[in-house]
Length: 185
Image (cartoon, rainbow, N blue to C red; front, side, top):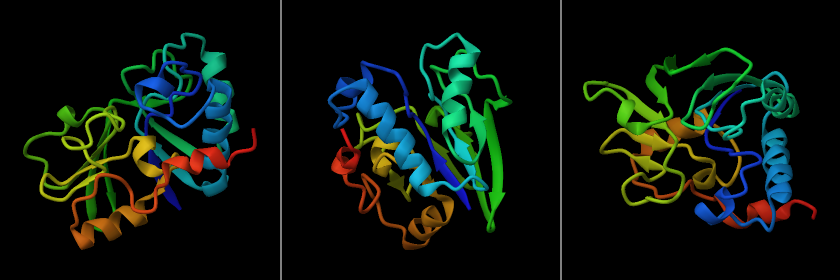
């Protein structure tokens, strides 16, 4: 299966307050995000990751340590906080799957105006849901920041169901912000 997500910000203390994440500590957030990822992603799955894994980290072995904890084969599009990623990275990807053309990038502003398919991005988290909602069928844009997905990767097949329905959605249906609290403390 193919999944997609962005903006884990593992080890980033300030992201809890900045994005109003429901965690009491960075270690709780890190543990929960890794557990949630591995609960849905199998080792033979593919994950399209759209940036900001471990912000401000310039030591490749630390980033690699986080990558080693995450199941699946990761295709990495760099974000604004990815200083040193020890695997192949991309500025963007044009991806064709199930007759859908997807433009994958960290920044929504990087999606070409004349792109005829769907633009999938992160970067804005949950801070501007009115301007950057989870699913905007009019603009043909999907925001896959982890806060809007219930703190776990989303299968691309689920995105296709939303495309077919065409509803404007601020967050992923069923994404419970308190899901993060299901992790043992």
